[in-house]
Length: 68
Image 1 (spheres, rainbow, N blue to C red):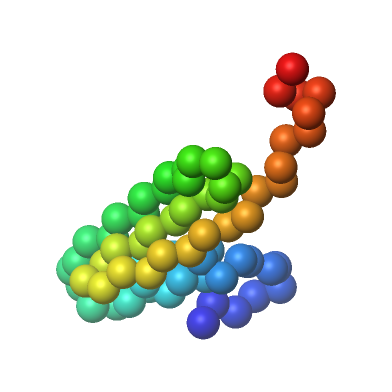
Image 2 (image 1 turned 45 degrees about the vertical axis):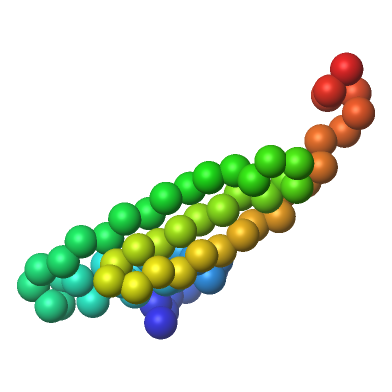
């Protein structure tokens, strides 16, 4: 796991871990895909690098005044 004096979210740490593995191995490819889910106010993050990790992050529900 990534160590330091700052806080990172779990998916951010996984991105850094996978990138470090690729760099130390000498070759490879990593894809990060970010998408929105309809109607549930979530953001999805998929990290692919030989295997995949999927994270769903809850978003704040917009206030009614923002919609009208």
